[in-house]
Length: 271
Ligand SMILES: [Zn+2]
Image (spheres, rainbow, N blue to C red):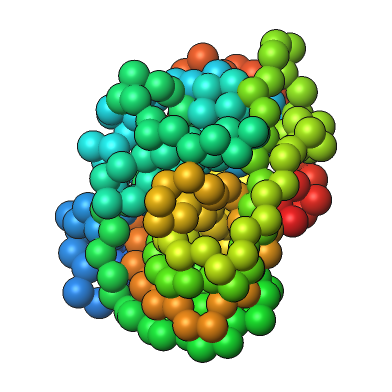
């Protein structure tokens, strides 16, 4: 009898544990209690490939921008052959190439790595006297409801200083990203008004996307921009969008490619 009770208790505990597990699966975090099992577009990141694949030189575009922008109106990434930096907001995507030229992206162009979402602000802040990029990141990090979620970040304002980079198109056989990034061009702007598109990736997501902050910039006239290396600003408006759902589109063509863990190379590339 005792044994039957015991077995029943274990069975009930198992059911409870499974139920709790199922609840956790559909409730991504206590910071977002209103989220149901159906992810809203503004709560979902749509990503093409992984940072690990990009670090390993997987630069062949697999998704067209026409298709990408149906999954999100806001994002960043790169182009087929690693041909420059991509920034998208308000439904429009731009290329900043290695010579600094900005081009609106045709729908037929493709990307080997990009992340987009339909931006919907959950939190709006005004920051004054941002002394550099590290200061900006620290101040945003303090405002995040927690560091175990992905976030999209939009910043608008006048920047006293903006330092960006872009990378040139690569030829096959493609070198690893750390090698390709050695040939980057760096651009400096003073008193520039524009928009920053950024994402925060939690530490555990470091093989999927760039862990921590990753931001791209485009000025108001759409003539200058790139991947942000440094900045300063007197007053900027920062909008934060929690994105607890992640949709990954992995390229079939590279499914069997041997990948080396190159995440340690990220630090040198991103700064
Ligand atoms: Zn970038």
